[in-house]
Image (cartoon, rainbow, N blue to C red; front, side, top):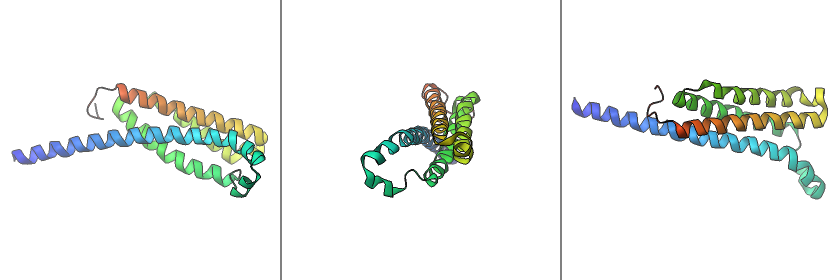
Length: 151
């Protein structure tokens, strides 16, 4: 019976460490994806003008924005949820969720309502909010002294 409880403790510790690693990697990935989105909005038009061969890559296509959302939304959901479980500060969800909603609005209705420039600014605002939420989450998790996500 004693061996079983030691095994249970080992499994518990391994799961906690795995969750901690997943949350850290997901936060950093979401920050990187948000920054990639911002760089895309700012740099691709300039690069297409300077290097016309890039125009054939369809980086300005709306499908690119949709694929970025498909990457950002689940990555953000995992990182922010695991982080909130660890540090217990659910207010960190506010900038992340607002940023995702803003980016979704930019993709779905931004061009039609605001034009190309408005869509870019809305996307940049959303990406900045998502990145800020993940940076805040990452810092809170780094400072958190609790060993168990349920504490």
